[in-house]
Image (cartoon, rainbow over all chains, first blue to last red; front, side):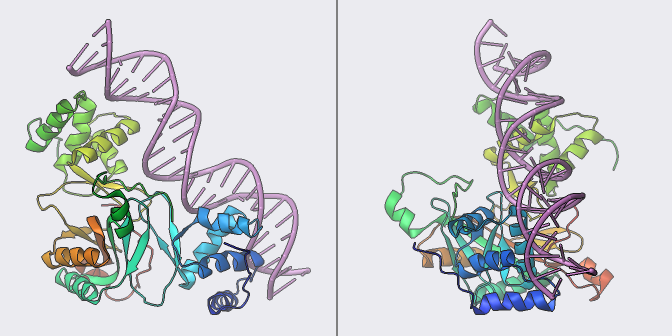
Length: 167
Length: 167
DNA sequence: TTTCCTGCAAATCGTTTGCATTAAA
DNA sequence: TTTAATGCAAACGATTTGCAGGAAA
């Protein structure tokens, strides 16, 4: 809500510029703008979301470039690709806390992040038990969030296929 | 290995036939054959895997029919759709133990199932903490399995994108 | 018979790629 | 200048859908 305020100074964006330079990759305006959109956001953005935000800023950047830039951002470790079973991917800025899991609302699509120490320990134990060298993991809990429970009550039952729209 | 032995009698397959009848859906040979392949398997099959097995039995069933049958099987609760981030889905027979999680090897693609009581409790607790009405969840642990560790030692580092081939 | 299915091909949809043009170094 | 990126459109791969012909009930 309001005018887009291009923030050319931001530690994350600077980190991306540094990454590009250090890897001999040109720092282009398109790359900066895609990076800016996602690095400033707190949400889990789809490519569609990103294109919409770019359009709102009156920037026309080809879809291919968006995908290519997201790939670099993911490799640089500044963003992470997520898959919530919607048929497409979402991208989120890598947060302060390294590992976190997701609670996903089946009604409104809201995504809540959480961390849990006990879970970290448990997952290491489980991997060990099976002789696995643990690399990474993902835990997603699907359900109905507080707000949706309040609104809809216990009427409409939740189906197994998430009717997530966006966000 | 060996000739395919069509097993027309099997509690699972019978369950599927019953489901079809009870829902006013015709019991066709195609549906039975797709169901047979997946209900007899213990693995996590892709549509490609299923088609291959059908071909081995000299059955030619259209891809669309395979997809449509898998949808019914999933709705009936006899199989579950899985997504291991490979760009396509896998299907597995619903096992005896209702909830189970997956350990996925990044080298060979092997999938190991496990259950963990403590985990079940933990996930309920976490959902409660956030006011979520828990519906279902998924936990996948990616790493290198015992066999691959033995073979490859600690040489080739594992990348974040799973090079899973099949299985 | 009536209804629903099957197979095929065309359509979708997210994502990737080839290539001529253009911008960064 | 040299090198690599961009944008467009075509290509892709998994999945879905429309429709004419063909089996179940």
